[in-house]
Image (tube, rainbow, N blue to C red; front, side, top):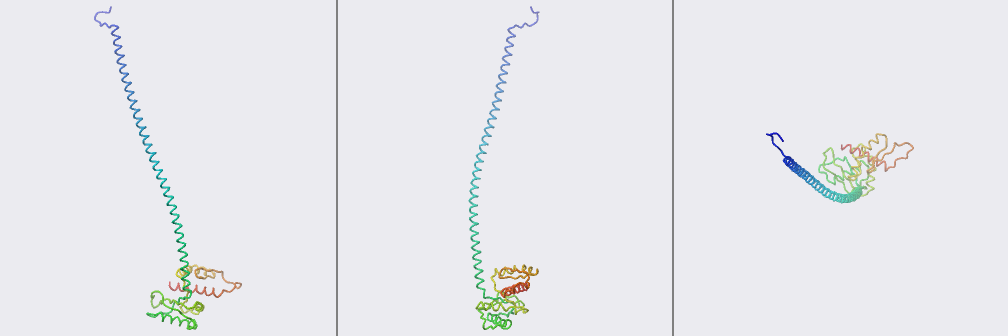
Length: 272
């Protein structure tokens, strides 16, 4: 028997205490299990939500890319159309340019034909208020006195000053139109007689040809400085090596053309 004064604990009480502890641990484990399941469920739900969001964003991006690809395709088609229209426009412009150049060439040719019987005289003194009749009279006097030609046999269709006044020391040029081309040729063939008179006879070229001849003058001078024979024929620069005794003589027409180039150069230098 146990000593007096001590509490006696029966086996049944111990079993009861153990059962209570077992129940308490069971409840604690169940609660922890439920808490863990809840945590896992929250984690799964959060992951699923993020996956859904990512899938939705991926789908939106895919749709956006598809839309962008559609826009790119449309832009490509637009570019093709613009390229086609641009090519057509270039073709049209090229055709128009060729037509304009053809018309310009024809216009220059017609202008040249209309001026083939003309001569421009530079250096004849000008009277105040000079009329066409006075200009024609001075031209006839030039033919008679300086060129020693029968002015009665040379028929002048008209003669007049051109441009605005340039002052008493710079008389305006006189444009002379002869009735016959052979009269003009005969006059131009005697212009060497005007050397030293400060009076010059020149062809009445179209404006495009005059501009081209003016641009060729520096190149002509450069060739002459090298000792070459250089002259301007209409709108082209002709260059030959220096003549030697073995070379054939220069035809009269080329000599006249060369004289025309020299006088044109002197006239241009005089204006400058």
